[in-house]
Amino acid sequence: MTGLLIAGTTSDAGKSVLTAGICRWLHRNGVRVAPFKAQNMSNNSAVVVTADGRGGELGRAQAMQAAACGLAPDLRFNPVLLKPGSDRSSQVVLLGEAVDTVTAGNYRTLRPRLAETAFAALAELRTEYDAVICEGAGSPTEINLRDGDFVNMGLARRFGLPAIVVGDIDRGGVFAAFFGTLALLSPEDQALVSGFVINKFRGDLGLLRPGLDMITAATGRPVHGVLPFHPDVWLDAEDSLAYGRVLGRPGPPHGTAWLRVAVVRLPRISNATDAEALAAEPGVRVSLTIEPAEIADADLVVLPGSKATVDDLAWLRRTGLADAILAHAAAGKPVLGICGGFQMLAARIHDEIESRRGTVPGLGLLPVEITFAAGKTLARPSGSALGVPVSGYEIHHGQVSAGDAEPLLRHDDGRPEGAVSGSVSGTHWHGAFESDAFRRRFLTGAARQAGRQGFTVAPDTRFAAIRERALDVLGDLVAEHLDTGALMRLIEQGPPGAMPVLPPGAP
Image: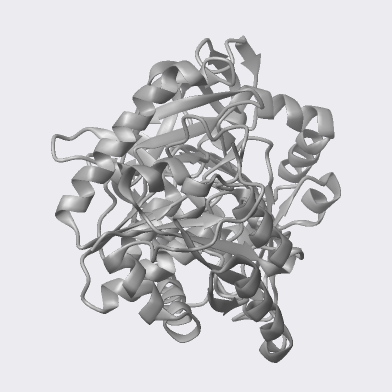
């Protein structure tokens, strides 16, 4: 077998979910399959602990795709991860390890090293698996970035991969996007584009079918299927912008009242996926917000992770959100901080590493101080909280350097983690709320603090099972709505050859 590249007309066209769906379909058919994304730009990451005990990061989407393949995450699945810390700079994570910070100006210097690392990782995976399903980044037709590209058509050219272009019809203009994506590629790149997939279709397929025939006639390439919009496809988003205003599809309450959770959509939000486990609970409505009024109306306020803690804290103050959070806490209602959000709740933050602002005041809701260390903590800890087991993962430079607050959790060896003060709590552990018993007890306490006496947590929500069902949904969508015979031929045999070239073509 050779593999496949899933490209997209735009960011958030559906590349990640289509890759996961194809991986799941192949896995269920007995194919030894692995995912791959040469370079990802995302602040949503997962932690891998290697055999030698070293912690490393890869994109959250590739960890999800690995699960679709029945695999544990492997750092080679996403060898290059760029984590934006501002509009102009990103931390470079290479095979799991933070190695540099790049800007648009110095990226070209570093790119050959990143490309060779990515090519080597894919070459290794192709010797170990029957098929590797590769996800592109953004659009393959970024004509100003084609020179040196190793994620989209540069990757396809290097390994002779057939490329499928997916487009989100919900945005409108999908046929123009397909045609333009192809027409602006060079003839050599066009030779690898082997078809299209339409994503998020709602309506009568009969009305769409003439368009499918016309785009095939215009490009000489088939539409391999139309994936319908599905409300259960929302977990493990690569970017928080992929979420709507309300997260997930909240089920009706188990008791008589809803619990309203407001998650602050920070400018540099990271691992917003922490809120997904809360949103999976019946009767818990999780919204992402930048509005102080929504903080005032919420029962529980969550400050999520951030790739720029001090800068995002300043943004909270500029927008009035900080005052709203302080008022919420003063009323005795629960506030939760996770990782960067936990750091913002501290009395003081000492940062000579990330922002280099020195000592700045935090929100002062937790009696701790945070000091940023040069080295990044990357771990998958486990322990207990509220009398039940809990596990998670850590990705942070900030460390608790002072304070004697009551801990929120404890490691298996008894070490304290996080802090609690009245109705305010915080932890550096991402993913803790995927531990079902802990999530139930925390939400029960939060509802009591918020005065939501009618809220009762459901006794049987299993987040791991919900995630597994979501992956099965993706596999079902591929099996039922795509031409899987054509996909398998591409994976096994490569590009079909002798396809027409559309003018003008990139030079």
